[in-house]
Length: 117
Image (cartoon, rainbow, N blue to C red; front, side, top):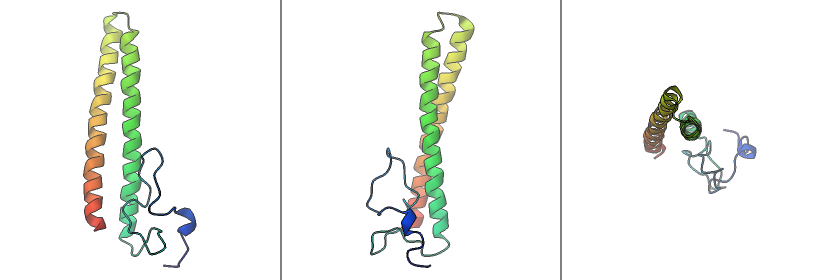
């Protein structure tokens, strides 16, 4: 690997994340200059896992948005059965999606963490 090739795109390993989202180098090891190290081709999978985790977390935020949207629809339905049922289904579907996103993030984080060591 050419030294300094990718360091212009990476922050220090000890740097924080943006709103708690994982960084693309989350599962990579840090070098002596405190930058992420891409030592072999297998590390590409770890970068891919971090990107997938980021996308899953964005999906979880979208699911939270749909829960809020469904709740607003439920409150403004004014007792109409069709609107109430539609809002209830939106809330239930969003909560199922949120549970799936949280489970997928946990599983992916566990698996990628095992390959990191």
